[in-house]
Structure formats: structure tokens, C-alpha cells
Length: 462
Figure: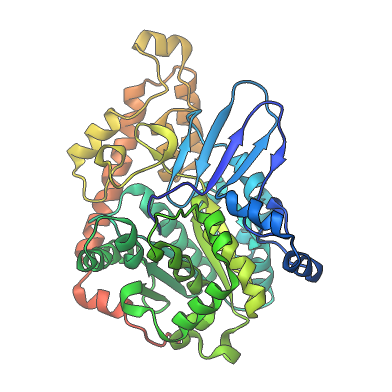
């Protein structure tokens, strides 16, 4: 939903240090950001000494340092940048440092029980591995209360790559399983602000990306897709202004790392992405505030979007709304390795839904492998499946758990060669991309118009 920019949250691991610094709010510790706000904390924040304010103004990013053994290492996870010097993201550290909760087997089993269908592979395999108050969503659903889904896309390229499809594939599962409405935000305004795109081009890309999203199979009777340039106004804009009044300039600098050279358009954008978390932003779907204010929101997204919604969750109770819940995924690895997420700006780091079978084959065959240099060594020593990109991709797209386990073990012990594993993946991806291509070709301009028209959805629940 957002693009690359300055650093925001920096998780630093260095030997012998345990220090926590949080510019997000004057009155709360880092691990409490986005959690319950007590009245005494608000009073404490209002009376914060000037010297503490000055110190927070100096700290434009969050840095978390903890005691570990060995050399210094660093990972950066922000809405715009995902990097790790050690070649992999430490997700357990992110859970601790971001203050979210781990998805566990009991919660997955509860989803199956409440929906009456098997859990999605992304749940079973911990692709969606963390959450914020997803348990409250399940509590509400069990009591017959309503919730809706919100996800989005920042349209910076003509087509999507496989990493872009992951949240939409999972969101479709959630919509089908819980039978709930969905809003999908296309942040064409944000791409205009961050990327070298003309305004009309950003709008055009939003519509093109909408076709790929519709091709994922969303229920037209439960789904509203909107572009910010076309929809923002009315109650949506009023919520943006309400949110803006809850967040100081010092806080937004601390959350997102904005600096003095950034234009003010960037500073004003976070409330745009926050506003869909509140049901009153969509009166054509949920009615007026009296009818809709208690409807909860669940946001499936990658964990790099978490800063936006920590800010939103902090503002929500002050505005009389429920805090949005989140269910958060790991990053889909680039073909060159899993140190970060795939990049739309590097066509060789990703497989696109427009790639031909030959392009897919060539990209997979050149992808980073944990196999040995020769067939003889592979049979003798086996592969390092922890770093092997084809095995990781099979973890996303091979539905059969037992077959995935068999292939992984055979490859790890040398019973399968690298080329054999890559061929399995190529066959799966070629079929998947071709299926998506056919579905996209069936999406007409009239269908896009309907999905993107603000309209009542009388059968969106149940």
C-alpha cells in the first residue's frame, strides 16, 4: 500500500546493550504502542517536561537494541524499506519489538471451527504469523457481531508480482470463510507523492491493478474497490481530519522518519491509509455513525504496514471507534534470496502475473538455491532448505502439506536434485499464472466500474 522512502523503525542488535527508545508517544513505552491507553498515561503525557520533548524531537526513528551474542547486526522493516544485513528477517524479534502477538495452533483451529472449513495454507504454515487482536474479531464473530475486511495496494507498476498476490489470495479466503464485506484501497495519491509518476498515470495504474485484484475472484456483492483520487471526501475525509488531530508532527516524524526536506504531502498521507479502518468512512455500505460505529475492522497485510495501524489504533478509542485488528504476514522472498521483499522496480527479483512460461522457467532456474554445486555433492550432503528460494515458494503455492513435506525432506537429504525441485515449482507457477491471466482477461471495463462504484451492498453479510 506504500512505497519506499526514509527509514522509520530500525531494529538494531548489538552485543551487551538493552535500550528502548520510542518517539511515538511521550507517555508510553515502545511495547505498549497501540495497546490500551490508560487515563493516567494521558495525563502524564500532557505534563511531559520540555527537556523530554526536546529529546524526542531529536530522535526521528525508533531504535531497539538488545543483548545478543556475536557481531552487530541490523534489520530495517518499514512501510518503504525492508532490509537485513544478515540475509534474513528475524520475525520473532519483530513480534517482540512491534508489540504484536504470535498466531498459534489454537487460534488456527478456532478459525476452522468457526468457519467450518480448513485453514488456508498461509495460516497452517505461518505465512500469516502475527496479529493484533484477531482473537477479538473471532470473539465478535462467535457472538454474531459484524466485522469487515480492509486491505489495499499501492499502484506503482502495470501488473502485480506474486508477492503482491499473497495478501489478496488470503483476503479472498477470509471473505469466503467468514462471509463478510471487503474494502480495497488503491493508494494512487500516495504513489504520486512518493514515486516519479504523473497524477493521471497513477490513476491509470490504479485501474489496471484493480483488474488483477478482481481476477483473484472477490465477491462483487461484498467488495468495494476505491481509488483515493476518486473516492476521498465526505465522511472519509472527515475521519482523516479527526485522525490528523490525534497525531502530532513529532509523532509522525518518529513513526515514519520524515525529515525537513520531505514535502508536506508525505506528512498528510498516513491518515489517508488509516481512515478505511473506521466503518463510518463508507456510509454507502454501513450507514451512518449510529448504525456502523460498532462494526469491527480486520486488516490482512504484510508486517511492514504495521506502523500505519499502530498510529490508527492509538487514535481509535479517542475518536470513539474500535481499534482495527490486524493479521500480518511474512515477506515473500525475492528470487535472489529472502533478505527482504520483492521489488516492483527490479523485474528480475520477481515473477509477474504477465510473465510467459519461458520467463517463469528462466527466472526460477536462476533463483537462489540451497543445493550443492554438483549433483554428486547434492546426493552426498543434501541441500540447505532454510535458504532455498524454490522450497520457500513451494511453501506458499503447493497446497498439499504432505507433498511439501516429502519434497523438502527429499531435497534436504539429497534424494532430490536442485533441478528437480525447480521443475516442480515451475509447473505450479506456470499453471497459476496462466489461470490468473485467463481470469484477468475476463475482467471487463464494466466490471471494474461496478467494483469501483460507491454503492449499497445489501447482501454483504452472511
